[in-house]
Length: 248
Image 1 (spheres, rainbow, N blue to C red):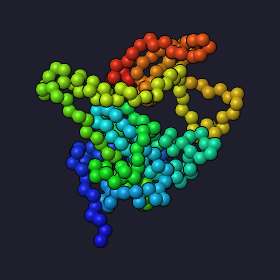
Image 2: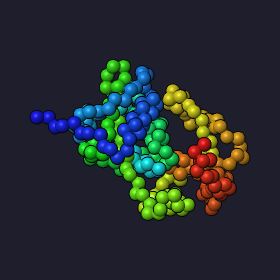
Image 3: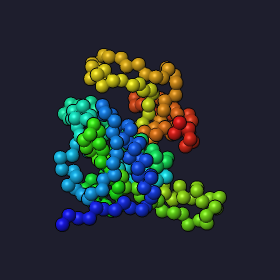
Image 4: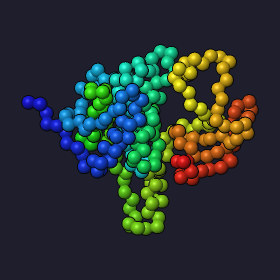
């Protein structure tokens, strides 16, 4: 007798899971539109057998979550991330993962997060969606939303929100995050990237002398100017941005 299908957890509204899956499907870089269909069967490690490009990520924010995405390599133009490849599967699929976790509110997404795929698929709190394109299944998307511990202050207290954020961040004080300084960026097609050679000049979207962006795990948090310190580059902070500015 086959095992009973795992029921959808009631940790959050099913609409939240569906919204995340739909946002992800709309951002996948495939030639045909992708639809996300709720997976009604069992979720276990067998789903990983013969799976395509597999990327996992962790999201910490208003709602925290673990996400797992598998897409057939041919749908992504081959097998990204192979020897000598300039782009990885995580690079190609990150915009889709950002779209999915974006529906959970403000937070930080990391594809370096250690998410155990088989354990996550076997977790009763994981919701899984099949990804379909051009009449066939091309992969799956799994998401597990974690509850942030509520604060102990009375509801409506003026310090309630502030203490809640502080308590959540206090638990990850020792977690290392990537701080990046960016002097500009541009968009290029894969063809142009593959055609780059030593000596090529890439024009950026930033004028000379403009402040550099300082990003924490890909999120803009401050502005600064590049300086030289004992023959090493550094950055002098000139402006700290608030949450809304960083999200803009």
